[in-house]
Length: 67
Image (cartoon, rainbow, N blue to C red; front, side, top):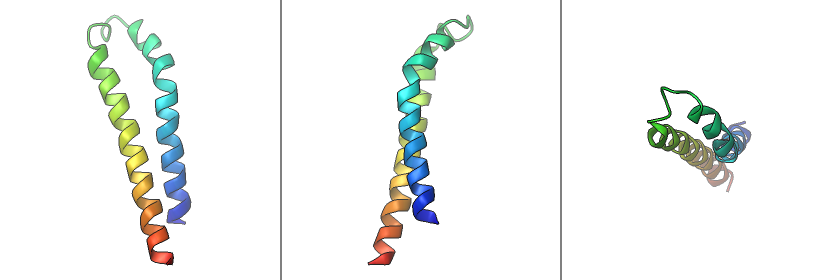
């Protein structure tokens, strides 16, 4: 079960990377965030990295146990 959860985490993390450019255009339209785009973009990319790494760790640990 943890193996599939890891695959889902990786897929969601990659989905975050895929959606960032489209979402940033919408975020830039909000006046409050227009001056803070770097921080918002940084947070989105860190979220994606954390998801991919966490999924990779789960997949690796599960594959390592099965050997």
